[in-house]
Length: 230
Ligand code: 5RP
Image 1: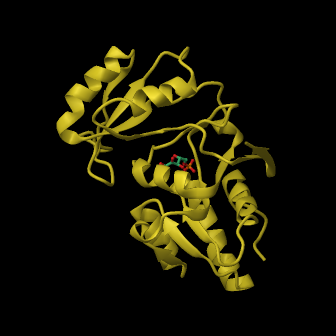
Image 2: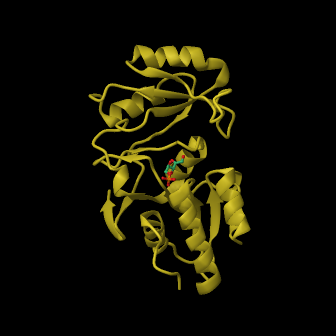
């Protein structure tokens, strides 16, 4: 048995783990909420013999999962997974997500797409009316193409620049070697159009708008968890 959840991130992660069944191939997200989910999976494996195989969306999640005794396979071995559980930075009423603060967008979107079910673990603070309310949209670009790609995005109404690293003495590089443009778009553009616009821009490797991918959003609010299905 685990103790009472310490906070909403842990509460929602524990709730998400009730969807895991023995033998599943489970995708592990990245971030503080996803970390609680990894810890809960490891606990269920030890205490309830819930054996699963996992696949991680980042090096940091892979290292955490392995250190807790979970079996982790590489993306190269996998075309489809049973369940993917990950957090988000923003969630709209139509269940479009903004993700990518952790710069692992390529694997995160691959796993979201490869999953039979994509569960989003979140709390009330992440709910917004429109994508881009609280954060710019992270867009991973091929390093050699960033100027031309930025120009195309600006021509489509975006403004923004390359993301700096946290020490502010260089540029952020994603896990897969891309540069990251943080772009803001007019709030009148729909989530579907924004997704299409960025998808269709040459030089873009991946971006933080996850449209039409979530199957279930779990929203924690003071220890209670609401379920919103697609
Ligand atoms: C990483 C993500 C995270 O899921 C998102 O930033 C939420 O993080 P947290 O659970 O720490 O609030 O998209 O790329």
